[in-house]
Length: 427
Image (cartoon, rainbow, N blue to C red; front, side, top):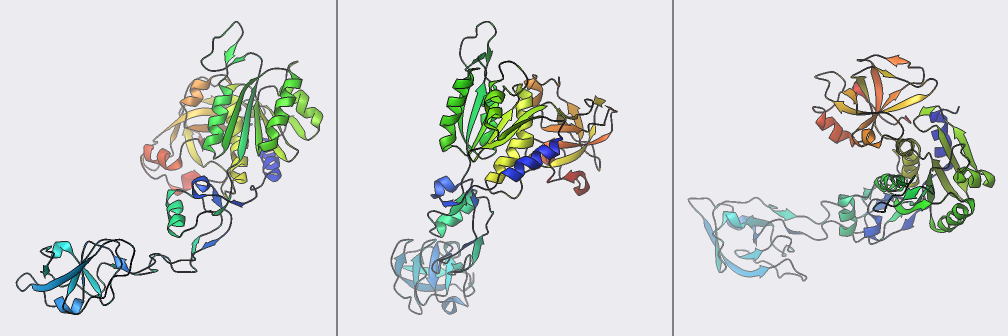
């Protein structure tokens, strides 16, 4: 049987970042920047006030204090609005709002809390320093600055920065368009009425959700019947506007495993048995330029396979440098057993191991490939080596985190020791 690591390596060698293209900011959110971005405008674009207050010459109020305030006439108002304000003459002040352009001649803004707040004249009770409460042009970003490097994931703050810099359509690697097909004539859509021998189609919903969490744009096609012609026709339709196809079911050795029948005949999709549990039957290949991932039909097998193989591939297609889930060294809470000759991925919940000790991994329930409730309760996959045999309680193993690492670390009693973390491994 082929190893998990070899299968993953073959997949990652066959996929790469999607070709970059400009996208509007709303569509670019969640995408990866494809090229270094340098500022063509400054931030702020002009000197402006950081506070509501009064713009004036600092020298005019240099001696102000609680016992000897200084009063100046107020000659106007400057709102945060378009236009160029008039100069401020020595010995005068103007009211100014936060974000409004600094008038010529003024070298400081006294916040309103240091004054009596009047409109005709203002009394200043504290002496400011020159430059106080002024945002200088370019102090955040200067023209020509590298503001975002290639490879940066565009989240809320990055989108806000691009908007502030008047970048309407950054060049990014788009999120992959993924078609999810679940096969089986026995499948019924959620909410339908079940007849004898029928089951609800959970796989398409679960895998589609996992693909969305991995950053893909997903089209879900449920309940593809066990008909080679029907599957082939549907596959041909979705490939025309799809960057990847994920199927579940129909990849083993059954008489009605139509996915394997159709794709094996194409010659570019290879079906193999992997030394892993759950999820031994796997298939992968590139069909007319589109990566095709064929996952097992058991629900836990499908999701574990997605985590190990599809998620890293989708992240690579997005242009992300980091494609793997983080892992942690943990200890087993109870004895566990590896499948003979196969690496096992057991569903576990992690608990705080105490100060200076690794987290403790507790099995969440039955470990059968059909037992979805145990996976739903898990926050990690405990990796039991193929040669592990009987692993006693208290043994250190590696766990693949399914939750965000920061969230998991917080629940486990704080930051985890550096020597208990492992990242960038294939699992």
